[in-house]
Image: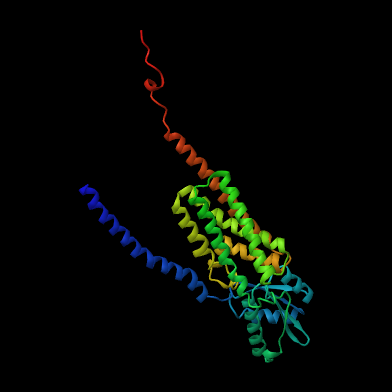
Length: 344
């Protein structure tokens, strides 16, 4: 008894020290993950098209190259080809050289922030060339939803999906649901989240404008990828897996997603990492199916499917390993207890 009472205060003291140390570490990590990329927003190899006569296009390319490392230039024969590239999500916009001066094609549906950035850059370029920045004609080839012209509601939809996925994976784990029942529960929960989210974002708020069922499927796949990560890590590593998965999906996945701006505006390798995590891939997939008729949707869809498959596989594997461990702890009774002693 004295040993137990002496050890208890020491254990409490260690727990208090852990909390005191861990809290500022988590705050510092959160500030780094959310604030640092936002404070370093700038174009980095942002895909941009140029179209028009060869001589004029060369001059525009030279002027754009003055922004070192900002743009990845794609040359097109005419305005029609540049429009097609924007609609296919190959570039975020294009500068078309015409007899009346430069014309800027943008796609605010791809990123309102990028569209505004391109307007400012091209206006400054025109002014530096001796023209008037106000004379630059801008055409929004693929506009954002009328109810969400700045994309705020769209970007705000990423965090709830991540939270729903984390919650579903954690609840399945804490309730002790295992194996095929766990995978079935995660799939059903994700499907329901997709339907509800599409009903809110598309039918009610009107911030999504594509095919309703394609949007619901994209939202469900994003949720399933997140919940599978949580449940899979928990099945392999216990409750610590929930914390690890939550940090990955929410603390890194959300600020690295580029949903509020664009992956090419985030510092490297943050933008690239974000597109390999469920929130970033989910945001890209939702943009494609909602505004671009599914253009460039294959990559993010495969990324989400990869996460979901690995996560659900880990759930099944963890369940099988735990069942084997439990079976191994049930040792057979000694022979003396299993069989009566032989008497002469």
